[in-house]
Length: 210
Image (cartoon, rainbow, N blue to C red; front, side):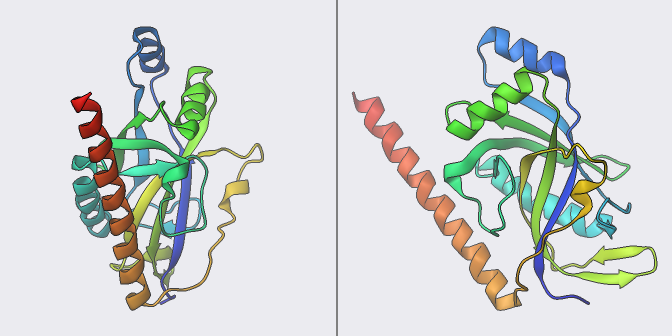
């Protein structure tokens, strides 16, 4: 089994272009829905995410969705922590279909710089991909590299699709993490997000008093 590493998986994000036009015309926040991942199939990186493991992580991620903390970035980072300065979207719903397809509903944060860019891409019908960022290790098996139960999903980022077919199959992985380091990274991410939430609440409270 390999050590715990930063795992990235890229795929097309197929959405309904009519939803984009409707939101743009009504001046409402742009919300798009599409496939974000699949269980029990060999992906472009030769990895397999077992349904039970992926389902458990989806249920954990739902807690962030409910608290509006399921934020992602525009373009991938090599960090296991979400950089809120580059935030472009937040998940409003995520679920797994019976066939193991993971679906996501995403609100574009058009009040932030990266969110404005992302919305512009959608409105101009620019094809984008979506990519999970996670920490975990794999077992090398005959059918592919099977992700183990130490998987921890960090977020899903929106990324550009390379013009050359298969170019994004080259996975960039950084240092390996021990389980203790993994716990510290997760704890740090939760503290940063909590602090940001408190700041936003304080700002909202001040505005309501004016």
